[in-house]
Length: 523
Image (cartoon, rainbow, N blue to C red; front, side):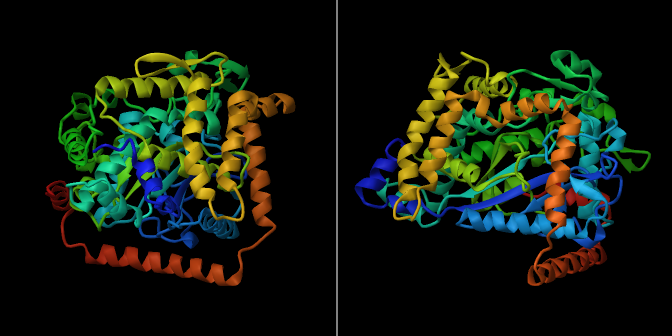
């Protein structure tokens, strides 16, 4: 499919307004921290609901790593209002704990200080827990305690039949949509390093982060007695010290089509890996991991962007994609905004929406393994040293300055921002585009530079700086309360989630071994 003239076609047929009002949802992770400044050792608070079944408040890797999930809304203000309400409700329930505002964890004392999340005694609950045990054995727990924002975006549904017709596509509408989403994904892989530069907020790390992997400390400079950093880093969360596996680096996941993606990911889930076979799967009748393959399940494959489909209960994500196509994309490269109480603001979300639409309408040729390696290399460069004067990246096999390429990307977003602002009472999208231009010209304005500057000014190590800001955010929530009607809704959701977990546990009929076999045998 030729996507190079999508925007031109829409404008010629006066259909460009169909690009507006795509659905935007946010998932946000935050570590619970005790009043003493250490990762909470308490279980997931029962009053918040059951992590297995609650639609909006759950846990990620650890019992202490909360995950908040909004519904998708066409207007970002609604999404952020819902996220704010989750935060307020959680703070109304928490005792002597607060949420860490940074992506990189503080207050940890080696792997075993990070409690693995538990989801009850049902088969699906056991599976989720054992998957996390497997991640521990494969990568260690510390890197799993890193938090971030996942931005979920669904292209406006009304756009698809119009584009399908205007491009004279011979594919079915569902196949066309999935193919176009993969066009978007490939372009985001090319240009997504810009997210790290503009919004990266993890330029420094507590030395304690490396307690379980001290050999990695030599890669860094010392900021102070408790902090390591890179002087020009933007997002160490997205660097090779984050969630990374050497065996994944060699995976050749196909992003050129839905079928290629599903088949290549499925191959990794079904291919044994010798190092993991050494760990064992069921040792002395105790599961250490779900299997000994390169990937236990799809979610283990780390990528900056994922094609997604809503899954049915106990359905494999790859099967959901194969059966019903791509429904939305999940952008996974956003650090928590330490300066914002809920970790993200409307401007950031609007910029990402405009960037994703720009990626959709641009030409998006196929990528091969070399291209994929180049994209990863660009991302790592920006993560470690994105603010370095004169930094160059590789675009189309040629060196280009980060500054020049960033301005090219912003220029390509201009017509999208104009469309998104058309007939609105304000120019939010154009305003946010102009704000980001300033960050290209003045790297000291980026969040990563501001964090290091404030640490220097206040003479604080990263852990103290992070905890102080986190406590300030917590105080803002603790002097307020959620209104009674919203509180009642969240209370009901919590009660319903506990009832749903009990129902799932009571309705299990299979032994766990049989359940697992049936899950992985889905065709």
